[in-house]
Each structure stands twice: as C-alpha cells, then as structure tokens.
Length: 294
Picture 1: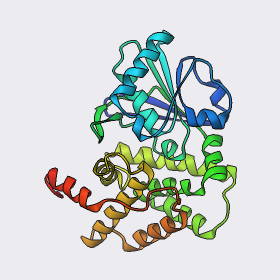
Picture 2: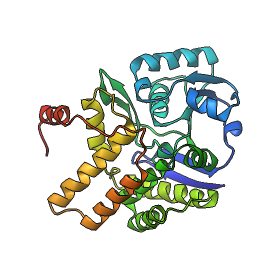
Picture 3: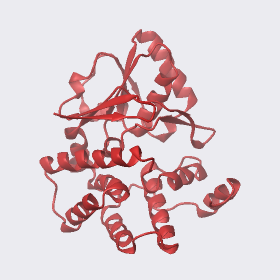
Picture 4: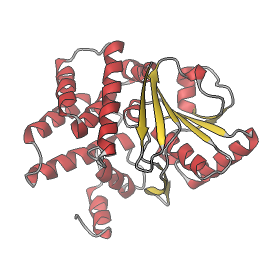
C-alpha cells in the first residue's frame, strides 16, 4: 500500500491511499454510490445510498437529495463511490453541509483516479458546466488499482488515453513511455497498470501544485456548455486537448512532434461510444459571449 499527502495552498491536507480491495474496507460513513458501479461490484456496501452517475446528475436538485440522505443517515462522514460527476456532486453537497466533518472519495473510473478531485467540487446550473463550486479538499482518497484495471481489461482499453493526457500535460518522460506502450499494441498487465496509475497521479499532483491544468480542461468545459451538457465529458476533454494543441502549434508555443504523437494515440484509442462530433457554431457563439479568445 502506497500513500501520498497532498497539501493545498490554504495548508489543507489530503491523504491519497493506493492499494486493492478497498470497497469493503471504506471508513464508517454514509456512502453515496454510483448505481453503475454497484452493478459491476455486485455487493451492497454498508450504509449505501444509490444514485445514478453521469454529468446530468451534477445538479442542485441532486444536491438537495444528498442533504436528505445525510439527515436520514445521521452520519457525520460521507464517502463518494463513483466517477468524477458523482464525486463532484457529493463533494459539493458535503462541503456546504455543517453536519459533515469528514469527506472520503473512492473514484471508480480511470479518469477520476488519475485526476483526483483536489481542486474543489463543482456542479452544473441551467445547462452551464461547473458553474457553482466549493474550493475544499477531501480528507482521504482511496485509489483502488483493481477497480480501474477491471475497466481497462474488461470494458475499454480506451481509458488508457487519460493517463496519457495527464502525462502530456505534466510529464514528458511518462508520456513517451505510455506512447510506446500504446503503439506496441501489447496488453498491459495488472502490475504495469498499478505503476501507470500511480505515476500519473504523481504527475497530476505536481502539475496542479504549480497552478497548471490538464490540457483540454477549459475548452472541454466550453464544449459541454455549448452542447447544453449533451456532449460527454470524455470526448469533450479530448476534443479540447486536440484544439489546444493545434492552437499552441499554430502560435509557435507547442511541440509539433508531441502533438502528432498525441493525435496518433487518440486515433488508436478512441472509443466508438464517445461522441465524434461537436457543434462548432454553438462553441464559437459561447466563446464570443465570454469576450472571445484572450
């Protein structure tokens, strides 16, 4: 079991704990569980409250639903068990609730593991992506290698693109290693996966400590808002990354060879379930409403 302690600018601390088989050993708390994960995991967690995952759940209405669950449970600690959208919503709700003293996260998707929620929690409002936010840290984040490896091995190898995106943003050496893994076409073992996730999280922490963002984050948010939240998070983030890289290349601030390498792995790893189109006219209108590109 490995641990990393992250300290925010306000001196708050969060412990990230890496290991296996955490689901049955989570701290005593109210557990808000993604119903999709529950179907895969197959076992009921103690004191669980099921909610659907996905971007559409990140609403104020769902926040009030969590408040009701907190009142019924009479717990002073809460654990979010799910992907990034559910984690955002539970974190936002608990951050504004004075009865909650401890917040724990158990991310169940690759993207939510390699980009843990350490920059605050956000919910959508009136079809605007992440309009409302609370800036605070969870107390602990439990990163279970087996959970994300199951997603890679059994559901979609496309999820490897998210460690690649983190590496592209913050760690050139890790990016080159992952690029070579992808183009080799070889499957990744469980042991390799542990190293990939751990190294990606370390790179992500180093990046956000210096105030940087994952490439594609800001444009990805605009894409989702322009689509009235119909564009998926995964494809919006990747489209945002590709647009940022092309713009950087055009203005002479990017590495064209790295850009081409990233585009190559996107073609190799793109999941057919992700949206392959974006509404550029709506995106341009939104950018103009916000004062244009600065």
